[in-house]
Image 1 (cartoon, rainbow, N blue to C red):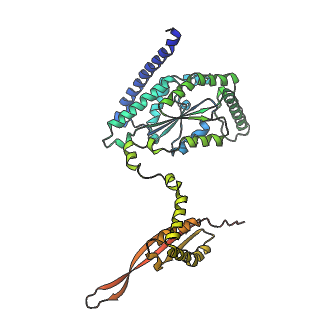
Image 2: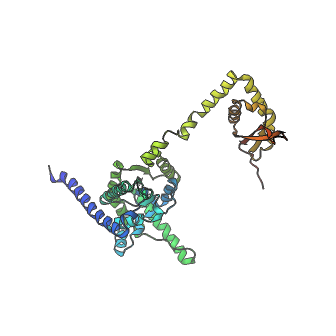
Image 3: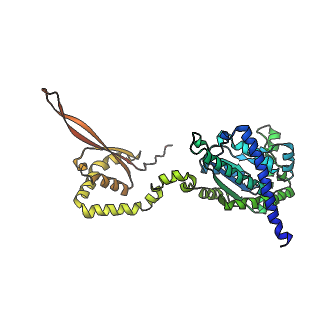
Length: 398
């Protein structure tokens, strides 16, 4: 076998060894600094990557909202503020893996990220991918270790979503340079008027060659690293070429909640037999039609009496509440003593476009008092309260 064919395997082995050395050093420092029982990492890790100009910063807030998280995004590039790191970034290159992993893991231990964290710009290299795998393995080990202790709630099994926002080289360079021009114009207005605050201006956003170099670094290093996550974690490839609304809808579709993937297996086994709402409503219309037709075929006289009662007693009250779209009906009609009447009433209202809820209240009404024994004889009084909701009238005021 030639050296050229062997080289990729050798390089990969070296990357794995480098990752193990880097991660072990960082992890040992964390255990010594915080203590193993305090290494509480997020339940969910959202990894958002993409070429420069793909909209990572624009869409991170929407991604967090889609997953129900209120913590701020962790922008990895903003964590790296040393002079050497800044010098590398200004030239379009990347900061060393050890520094990135060390700073990021400490950030993830902050309490605000216990439920989940979004990482903007991690992982970017093969070594960082390997470090991520090692981190998830360690979190799983902590989960198993503390599973039956008082600390179990702080050591949950992690969920990892890898999201890649992809754009072409042409789009990337155009967006980088446009961003640079927009920020430069903004900063100029701030300088001239003294109104507002200047924004950070990337050196690479002002130079086409530097912008192209940033994209090439992404393609040569980050792109392969991100693709490798596809075989391990929940992977979402998002075409970010389109308008913001289109991209955000693509993100929303990708991040829909899936209980079988997100709950602990033991938890899912308990709740799985409860049908999903969408399964219940799937055939609701057909089932309503079947029930109404069966009332007419099998209980025609009773069905007619129910409809007549609704039309004669209930609808005049409902019509008086047409503006609000909400009516409260009380009835003691003996017709309701028949068990089939309640479902008939609900189904008729549903078929007519109303949402009705019926509550039955039983009260004791005194009818006789025995002066000799002091006993009070009562009868039961049943009152049916029907709450009817529908879309009220739109009133234009003005």
